[in-house]
Image (tube, rainbow, N blue to C red; front, side):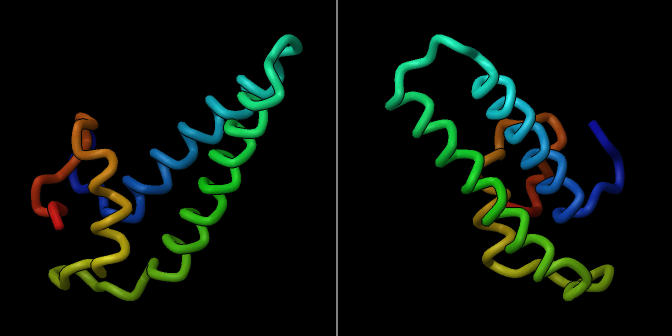
Amino acid sequence: MMLGVTITEFLQARITEQEIRCRALLEAELMPVAVRQSVSLALAACEAKRRIVEVHEGYFPDGQDPSWELLSLASAYSRHPDWNCKWAP
């Protein structure tokens, strides 16, 4: 577990992990078109999430609660070992 990680750092790391997995899948040569489209859509969702995180980054100084948008994004990763229960929406 990463101690002292902020919600934006946590989200950026999870988004990066997902992007890496998506790009690795897209490199596979024998992939059905529907699967390739789904992976491409997941990659586009990563970019959208990254933009949301970047917009909110820095809005919440230490001790201030993060936005509901960041809490909502982070909740998808609530089973991750670096998840902070204080981020539960």
